[in-house]
Image (cartoon, rainbow, N blue to C red; front, side, top):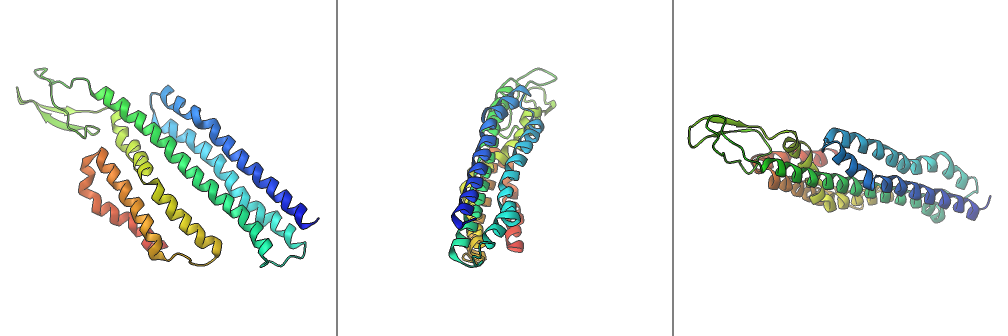
Amino acid sequence: MSFIATQQRWDTFLAKIRDRFYEVLNKTETVLPLLFEATDFETITFQNAWQGIYSQASDLIYKIENTWFDKVERAFLDLDIDYDTSRFIQERNKGFQLQHELQQELKSYEVRIFADAAKNLVSQAKETLSKDFCCTQCQAKLPIRDNFFRSHYTTCDYCQTVNTFEPGTKARNVEHFAINALGEEAALEHYLKYEHLKFQNYLSDRDIFSKDELIIPYRKYIETYLKKRIEVIPDYEERYEKDLSAKMSFIIDYS
């Protein structure tokens, strides 16, 4: 088989992977939001459903690399083309570039679909919590704190009874589900830039970008993520520096 014929087979394979990848994601565009509403915004079911979709998409992505090393690389080498020739490297990188592109797209899609669900959840929680919260003793209306997504004690101004405010499952899930999704949405561009710089190092098989250069977008990602959390639940401001230090230790220790 000629170089051109082998190249065409590789191109056809990559095109099929790309088409199948977007087919998987497009089918979920309306299904997941409908599932979220049908389960009354039950987050575990939503996350489990997404995990199945994510696995399908990820399998397609890694099929590119696996197919190259299992079959395509040998097909080109059998044509007596040296491993370090520009044409061979170009064909290898073509697959790696698509793999990176789809990984970035999958991350972006995941962040968007979760952020949309989070906004819907916050809206539903606020609607539920907009109802009057009254004293259990005298039925006087009680104030709700701004970060009402957590339970807290409120003393009645009229009879001094201490009441426990219970926000309910939807409101609790704002903290356990929504703030992470909203933080990831706010910080997405910095995360994608960090991953792109890492990919450039991988593709070149050398450190085009130093560890210090990689830290810049990663730190912006973490800072933006944490600050978005604070917007939703102000209490998180007290632990901002501690959380920032903990999350930054990952790249400092392992990059």
